Amino acid sequence: MEPLAERVLQGDVRATARLLRCIDDRNGPWRRALADLHPHTGRAWVLGITGNPGAGKSTLTDQLVTYYRRAGLRVGVIAVDPSSPFTGGAILGDRIRMQRHALDAEVFIRSMATRGELGGLSRSTADAVRVLDAWGAAMVIVETVGVGQDELEIARLAHTTAVVMAPGMGDEVQAIKAGILEIADVFVVNKADRDGADATVRDLEMMIALGHEILHSGAHSVGHRGARLDLAEARHRAAANEWLTPIVKTVASRGEGVAQVAEAVAKHRAWLASTDAGAERQVLRARDELTVVFREALMADAMARVGASFDVATARVRDRAQDPYEAAAALLEQYRGS
Ligand SMILES: Nc1nc2c(ncn2[C@@H]2O[C@H](COP(=O)(O)OP(=O)(O)OP(=O)(O)O)[C@@H](O)[C@H]2O)c(=O)[nH]1
Ligand SMILES: [Mg+2]
Image (tube, rainbow, N blue to C red; front, side, top):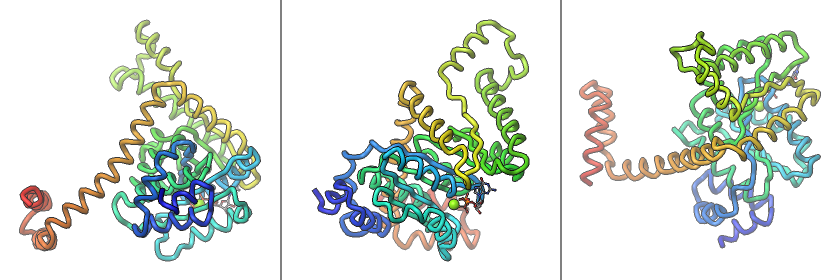
């Protein structure tokens, strides 16, 4: 076995940090180490925490770390920050917010900034999750900001995704538009010490109910609820096997509601373990991971083979001599013939 991988498996924090850096830079023994670690992964529960800037994700994460540490679990945290590849500002903020865990050898906190490459964020996050899993984290918390495509991909990396909202920010409405409703396994309405938290909870409840209605009656028959007995029966059966996204109110800054969030996560985990949906999700996760890596390998191979033609094609698209589809088709042809 690769020595660095071996040390990670023994729970060595410094080796873990070193391997993560190797993976980021794609250098040293990163690939062998990952391959060696792979059979030893799959034990950690991956909890994704997403939501708008300032909703309280880091504060909640910090509290959850405390909660899980009290339960005796080893915890990994990956804070993905797409906004500050240059300043590192928010990363510093996360560091400060989670500082009290900095000296705890059973907690590993890793911040990562996006580098702007397509799929790069989800790939390196997936790798980091694997490493922390092998290091022995029973729980890996992945914090991501916002609702962009990268975040949706990262959400699929998680076993359980918690979406954090704060009242009075219009997050609920945005959530439907961005498809957040579909990825949320647990809703957290944070800053419940502020006005409007109950209204946000009610809005979410309504949206969840509506979402299920549409899911089980088909778009055409919405509004004809229970019109046919067998339909109602089918719906009932579906409902029995269905995850109803819980909504938990928290005041993360005071640690209130944190245990309830952890309970909701535990329930979701139990639900996944006992239903087909859980098995399906495992397939989806593996598929996503493979897709990202395969895409990267294909792209690297293709770019190497078409070489300078890519720049020539770029100039043609810029000059409007060719549209991007035509240009891509020509490059593909060249790649296949190479
Ligand atoms: N009133 C109140 N403030 C809170 C609560 N939770 C967090 N905050 C504050 O909200 C601000 C943002 O909290 P963060 O935890 O950094 O939020 P975040 O979602 O991680 O923010 P980004 O990572 O920048 O997207 C901080 O000043 C927190 O102290 C809460 O329950 N109530
Ligand atoms: Mg944060």
